[in-house]
Image (cartoon, rainbow, N blue to C red; front, side):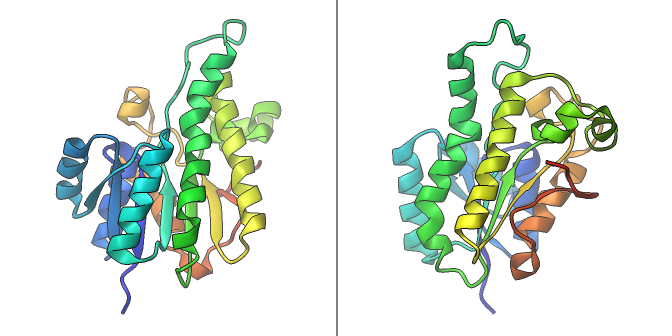
Length: 238
């Protein structure tokens, strides 16, 4: 039986690390993406994964990571774009600058684009290629504009223009890639408000709960839908 090769960007802690642990436990050959090699090696050793130096904001780093995966496994079955930053989370709309958006988008949106550009040739070599883009309920236009949708699907919704708009952009990028690559299963997921270092451990969910939809979609293979936006409870309104 062929081992599933999986790469998780931004996987040294939180949801990314928990996803790496569970997929490695399920038998995946997991590349754990980390900007810092020492931190990546420490995290990988803890969960049975393989550290991979990867900075999604750096073209050369992404391309070097793709070369290593090609050399070691010859293909990629699952790509999880989990690298993300909050950006200018406490900055009001009045104070936001274009530079604030550029900094956040460089990781949350352009990072995923860099990864798709570099790893699509390896994904095409898989029998059942899967891409999971880790988004957020804050990226839902429906939740942002409809109080009823917000109450049901994003109960901890807050106005954060920089971060939320980056996730809305990632959602559209996800759909466009799904249209462009019908042979792949490409989806956006909303882990929900999860207690991690990312948010100062303020979320009501555990990291195990937050990782649930990421793990589920990463392991679905050819049975997964494509071009969708999902949380653990089901589809999220765009």
